[in-house]
Image (cartoon, rainbow, N blue to C red; front, side, top):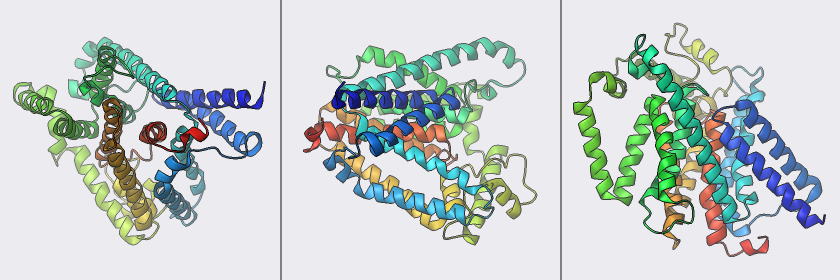
Length: 411
């Protein structure tokens, strides 16, 4: 076997393991971690010993220049915040989470054909749909018995993972593909009837996780999609929401209505935690207290915490401020702002409508992540992080194959 053929197969093994990592986060952290370890190790071996010259598209990575810098700055600040953490014992263990940024870069480098990208996306969507069908079946099987014990709004899909994690992964998956339903031509990705049949269970199981932060993100992204892509859909969506709010029995709408109830125990607990998180930030404004033993830090500031105050600060913004300070927060925000600006730039390029809709889907992934992340520490969830940064690589992969002037150098 010649070297070129060997590297081709090596590359495919990396992509298969990457695919396994992305779709397995929904049902097995162990499988996902093993897959990550395998492809990460193979990629490092390739760079060090097999093909020492890292092959990448110069034009595409030119688009990433300032994003790369901001990611690097954030990682350095995160490292410093752990070195000088409030509780420095074992603080460095968590720094390995930053290795997940490799998903973003290696996806852009290693996906070598558009067909491979589409196959990758189909696998992710199909497996997510099959998992959703299984979850819905289990939900319906358990429903009758559970209704005698708890209200329907408290029955959540949480069979394979924590419901917030499951809800956010399904949310991002759904909004990546949802804009393609507005495409009217012959699809190069998937026939619309198949796409609809796959998205329905994903959407249903997403709703049945009963994740209120996801509900808010759904509402915002549906409005944006309607405004940008299809006004008829916007009007129908608004009418459905209003009719549902007025006509559905209270037992079906109670959880959604609780979102604006400041006396709700979960809401009150979050507000208290955000206030305490702000105090932590004010006392440690430069690089924060480090993302380590955050609840022990919290108890130092609030010894008599309530039952709903647990785990973390339940907000990306307050967690980033408290753990990495103003320097980490600025680099974190700027990183995502630059990604958003690039996506808008790519969306305005002269591309096939279907490709533009995929890019728009990635914009909705970004928006949904940050809207839901206002109320949950989703950036600190490795499963959500993994799916997010693979999806965020997609517009740059599309740019590589349809816009870049240098991609032919290694294709």
